[in-house]
Amino acid sequence: MLKIIFLVFMGAGVPVAIAMAGASLVYILISGNLPPFVVIHRMVSGIDSFPLLAVPFFILAGNLMNNAGITTRIYNFALALVGWLKGGLGHVNVLGSVIFAGMSGTAIADAAGLGTIEIKAMKEHGYSTEFAVGVTAASATLGPIIPPSLPFVIYGMMANVSVGALFLAGILPGALLAILMMMTVAWYAHRNKWGADIKFSRTRLFKALMELAVVVGWPLLLWVVVDKLGAPAQLSVFVGLASLFVLDRIFHFEALLPIMTPVLLIGGMTTGLFTPTEGAIAACVWAMILGFAWYRTLSWKMFVKVCLDTIETTSTVLFIVAAASIFGWMLTATGVTTDIAAWVLGFTKEAWVFLLLANLLMLFVGCFLEPTAAITILVPILLPIATQLGIDPIHFGLVMVLNLMIGLLHPPMGMVLFVLARVAGLSFERTTMAILPWLVPLLLALVAITYLPKMVLWLPKMFF
Image (cartoon, rainbow, N blue to C red; front, side, top):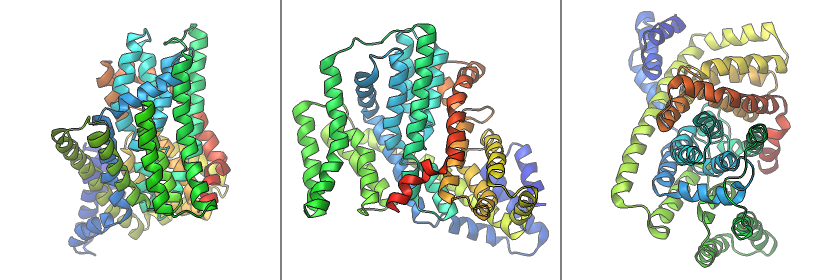
């Protein structure tokens, strides 16, 4: 009966969070087995979780980066690095998304922030609006795969697994996605005989490579100083950060300090300096230092607006989580999850078959539900089956999140579609058609991530 009530609410066009909470309340009232107050109690306890504190801070960090002009710096850095290749701005689009993914954690922030700059630049350089929208939409899916990631925080809380391990698990799949997308851009460039978008400049490229060398070499040098030479960790980190600011001032790097954000987050979490939740706070502090003190592109008036936007987004996300907690609890209490598990295990006991069916289900659900709602509904149903079949919860989390990110590119509820249609001034139908070819690299990556779990689990097993 619970499922029927929920489907009736959804069919009536009720928002998914209200449909979940409302269906639970109506079922309790009809059955008479529990007091209605249980709904409120379970909703409150559902968001009374330490890992969920990361949600508002990661949202705030992404908003601060967007409003402080840091997205422009990231774009210029990517332009210097790969803009001289054939189909250059397409490669810039993908590389810029890779970098910004290490700050925002959401596909919507990537599409709205970098997407505005990238689509405008690509149209000015003669690219079709459809191609610009397609590559921007596809690369926006990197936001929640490359750490930090808001969906990973929600999944980690629901599945009771380490958020830090999920963050590490997303690095190699994110790199695979980026490579496949850049190969797709190269294919378009070869087919259409596109040239480069900026002149090759040794000086410009050398400066960008030097910037990249600092990003890679700085944590390695810091590790040698702390681990091999026995220097105090906190003092070494402080001196190391000060040295970054000095280098940035001397060489006038384009985006050295913003690019260091994911390095600082992953380094801090893997060394135990802070938890993923505390890492979200560290990302906000870093963004504020850059915006207020270093680049001086952030004003207090802008900061207040950013905070209000963050509150609005956070309220929406946490209300969905709260509603899903009571709905998931009711699904378990009424035996729905047990019945589904028994049906699936009666149908097949092969992990690869279950993963195929789960992928199809999650792709379908992702077309209709926002990722946070989909995660909170699907985890209690699918994860117990995956665990019984010996599938690692970390691996299954990556598969689930990528499926739901692909769903963001699909009608009727794909939020990235709506954002980019507005940014590019395209109709919803033309935006949908522009994105269809880019599903090929995304689905190829999904197959690889689904059936090559070692690629996902190698880094988490190394550090956890």
